[in-house]
Length: 250
Length: 258
Ligand SMILES: Nc1ncnc2c1ncn2[C@@H]1O[C@H](COP(=O)(O)OP(=O)(O)OP(=O)(O)O)[C@@H](O)[C@H]1O
Ligand SMILES: [Mg+2]
Image (cartoon, rainbow over all chains, first blue to last red):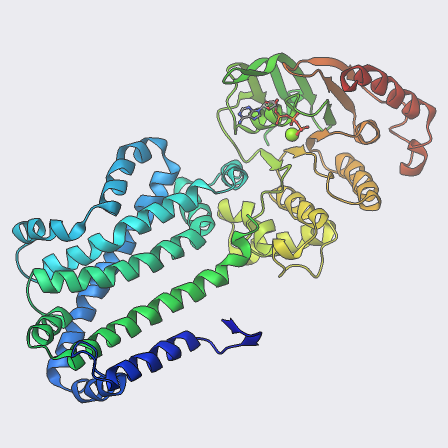
C-alpha cells in the first residue's frame, strides 16, 4: 500500500483498522465491540485452557481431514473433467450447482445421512472446499497447451504418465489457486458444521460465548480463526507465486 | 530393425490420404513416398496442410481415409520408430533443459543416469552446453527450438518428423544446422521428413522436395536435387543446378503468393 508516495509496511492497513477498533472499543459505544487490547488479553487467558485446546484440536482435525479429502478427490476429478469431454458434460452441471448452492441448507440432510458426529462435520467441510478445487483444476487443464499433450503422446506416454507428468504440472498454478480458495471456504464449512451438527470445537465456543454475550471471548476465538486461515492462504499464495513463472509462459 | 523391414525401399508411404477438419478440407487425395535414409522436404504455402500431414504420419492425427505405412506397417498411433520436432517446440515450462531433452527417454522408461548421459550428448550437439540447468523461459526462441531438436534426436528413432525445426534460429545458426543436418543424413541411416518455408533450405538439404498445393492439398511436383549432393557444403550454394532448382520452385510457387 502507498500513501502520499510513501511505501507503507505490509499489513499496515490491518494496523490502522486495529487502532480504530481499539479507539471505538475504549469509547464503550457498544458491548459488541470491546477494545482490541482487552480481546488480546482474553485470548492469552483462554488460549492455555484445556477447553480451548480441545476445541482447537477438534476443529483442526475436522478441517485437516475435510480439506485433505477435498484435495485428494477434487484435483483428480477436475483434471479428468478437463481431459474428457464426456465426463465434463456429465459432471459440470452438478459442480456448478453445488458451487453456488447454499450448502448450509444441506447440512440437515447430511446429519440425517451421516449422523451427528465428526463424520458429518468432516463431510460438510469437504463439501465447502471441493467444488472450487474441481472447477479450478478443470480450468487449469482446459488451458493447457495442446502441443504438450501431443508431444507426450508422440513419445509414447501412457495415460498415467500424461496425467502425472503433463496435466498435473500444467494445471498446477490454477490448482493451487483452487486449493487456496477451497481452504478459505473450508474454514467456513467446519465452523458451520460444528454449529449445526454437533456443538463441538470452535463452533461450540462461538455458541457458548455469543449466547452469554462474552464478546471479548467471542472475538478472541474469531481472531485465532482468522489468523489460521490467513496464514494458510498466504502460504498457498506464496506457492502459487513460485509456480507462476512458468504459468505466464505456457 | 530386422532385415525384413529394412528391405522395404520406402521408410514411409502415404497413399490417397484425405483429411478434413469439419468443413475445412486440408488434404485431398495426397500420395507421397519417403525413401529410406533420405531427407524429404515438404514445401508449400502457409496453411496448406504440412503440419497436418506430418501429424498424420506421426500417428497424432487420423486421416479420414487413405493408407499410411511406416516400414510397411500401417500407422495406428505414435510409435518409437518416429520422433517429432514440434513447430512450437512443445517444451515443458516447469522442467529444465536436461529433463526436457531426456523427456522422450523418460517416457520410454530409460533410467535416469542413462537418459541424462544421452541427453547431455545431444545438448552438446545442438550447441547448448552449459544450459543444462536452465529453464525454457530463460532461453531465446532459437535455443528453445534446439532443445526440441535435441529431444527428438535423443530417442534415436528411425524416422524424424521435423516441423520447421530451424524457423526460430538466426541465419548463421540456421546455416550451421543445415550443414549438420546434411551430415546427419549421410552418417545415420535415418529417414527425415522436413517441413520448411524456405525454398533455398529445402533445395540445400533435401534428397527430394515435395511441393504441396494450397488447400485442399496434394503433391503438385516432386523435385530431386541430385547433381550437387556430393559437393561440399560451401560450394552447393553456388552450384548452377542448385540455383536453377531454387528458381524453378519459386516460379511454380509464386502464383499462389500473389
Ligand atoms: N485443429 C484444427 N481445426 C480446424 N482446422 C485446422 C486445424 N488444424 C489445422 N487446420 C486447418 O488446416 C489447414 C492446414 O493446417 P496446417 O497446420 O497443417 O498448415 P501448415 O501447412 O502446417 O501451415 P504453416 O506453414 O503455417 O505451419 C489450415 O488451413 C488450418 O486452418
Ligand atoms: Mg505448420
